[in-house]
Length: 610
Image 1 (cartoon, rainbow, N blue to C red):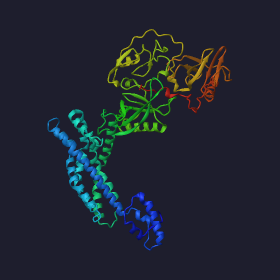
Image 2 (spheres, helix red, strand yellow; image 1 turned 90 degrees about the vertical axis):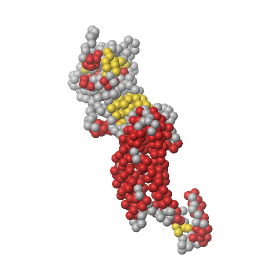
Image 3 (cartoon, helix red, strand yellow; image 1 turned 60 degrees about the horizontal axis):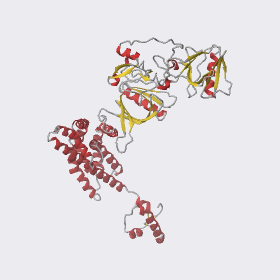
Image 4 (cartoon, rainbow, N blue to C red; image 1 turned 135 degrees about the vertical axis):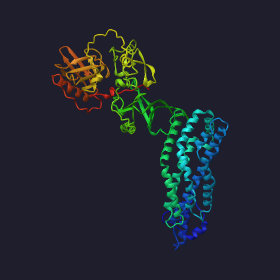
């Protein structure tokens, strides 16, 4: 313990034996007792100095680490050269696949293996055996420097080797079977051939790290300092040239991990693919407001939208959709039921996703847009489909609960005779009559899909015959059209006369600031009714039969009752309505309420199913 001493007599009695850490405390107590019996001695030594690691011990530890890692490295080299390469070459000589394929995959691995197993490793083992008399590393590592050119050749060929390996694994069943058989053996350590082939790429920088640490501990006047420094300079230069290859190898290692997580079914192990980001996400369903757990893998050229798999030891995810980065649009959205949402719109699919937090959402959007900028595919701020993109890009789907009527013929939906359908070209919710058209869509690999009559006319250039239209009693002002340019909009409970209360989407547009429009849902294309506010009386005194936070509009025998979700929201509506009933144009109230009585963008931001 600190302050304790070791006497020569105590060391003599202990026999100079080395103690394990578990013996330190008992030994220290014994030595304290011995010291107290003998009294202070002129040659007493602090106990802490006996067990403190000396510089010589640190140097020995680094040298031992080099030997240990070199043995493991030679084992890997032997596995590559004498097992993988030898077995594949044996089969290639039978004519199953070209011999040159095996040679080009393994490059000069045999030469690298020969040097390390027959020269460098035996020299290191010999030196460690005589370390007490010759504590040096620099002269040994100098023998490595002339052979660094072998690594340059291996690294240069690495990308080509990976491509060939993937190509022939897919092309030749015998080639694949040999590799899988070796990978299943205990010597492989449950790692793929690609993982083992990364070792030579990463080995030179590891020599550099160990040698740097060795030089830090080595005194300037040590005889080995000059040789070690010379070796480091040459190895560091070789490691610098390997940096881009190291980055590629680390990226490839990650691609291999993802490849295995996806059940080795997705073709992602490619030198041109660069891993960017991954993470858990929630997917908002198109037909309702449920959220489903999903997982995203983002690369420099695509986004993999995956479903988690609940299986022991097998693949973790199944790819549901692969969305190309080119033409992708990413923007934040607002959703009443779910915070932190954003929309990814690609040619193949449109998704509305929920991040775990606002910073996580911002990061996903930022990373996506940075990729687009790097590829000179500048991000756009709108996800709306124009006529030019119709059928070429997956649309965002309007949710079922956001409409109460067909968005084309304006007929109300019901559970039996008029059910909801989605146009696969524009994403509108329409009835079966308005979706009874089929056309090939480019984004869906030119498969035949149901589309609405308007999209059919645009995509085919043909006009569909229309039946007689019913006269509309209410103005055809679409709720979604004016939600973004309204003085006030949002859901309220509504009751007229003795009818039951029901939820309606209320809207006072800027263009008609003295009229209150009532819709069944935020995306409806026809209002259920309208209330010209001029001349109405406003009452907000509570009545026993009314809901909390209610108010009334009355004129002559007409009485309209409304109820807001909170008193604060009620007061915001009353502030606007009390001005409108006098004939003056009300001002838009500040958006200080998270419940959303301003333009609800989230009503328009939807996505495709599952």
